[in-house]
Length: 372
Image (cartoon, rainbow, N blue to C red; front, side, top):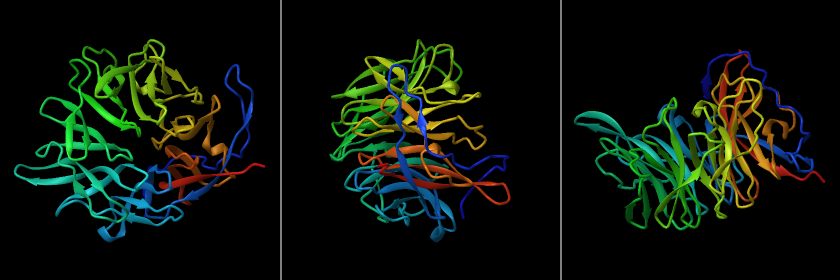
């Protein structure tokens, strides 16, 4: 069973590969080509990929009556190996990051009896199909783990009664990362192999719908802002590579997060990747970047009824829709990209149009193929 989305009139055939216009001042380049591999029927979305090609995602576990749970797909296969929830009565494991050793982190829901409620807890899983364990951060409250590197450093956020704060776990030691000034909502969302952490912080006194927000990074535990887009007041950093190149989303002056652009942060500014956004643009995000500086993410070129946008890849100074880089595939739309490794393999979520016109989602992987 696949996740069903609202029915819609949606042309879902992918377009053929071609040549895209280069960014101003850059020569035109031939777009790379990819082979599409769709996930099994039990996958709903792919969320990340490591260097050896292991994929994490969320799907419907048939052993748990179709409940949504996290999984790992080993490199070269399409079979999801579902993760065991930490403890009795816990559920809905969601992996967020996987390192090159196959260790992944994320969250699960913990059911508490008194008072009866659910809280989000950070977890670590040593490998595919393995039992997870709670990371122990903020043991009586909510917390989440967003990133793990090959040195087993883990980052995330924890929730207090009046604030959300970032943390770093190194070995068994958890350190609270400093917030941005007086911000009561500062979150760590990713890190690189050198221990540089990126994220976002709410800015006090903001006037934008949804509030003002700044992309931030922590280097050796010290926080600084990464910049805004064209005088805007909303940005977030979602990923950073080993070269220290951070990517994310930002809104130009006068716009809120509802009009965010996919960006790279450089020199204290957010640089617009100029991802095609169509006649009715919405949000766009750069979600991952590999060591070579190739970026992937999602945008809203297509009428975005599903809420998933389209996937794009940015390289050599220009962005290209992923749907233009695969063989024509009727009733399949690559709706967003969430991970890329140094081999150039890309993962994300595809939207499938069913014979009755309804929509469902499934994970996908794109494997580069030679054009020579």
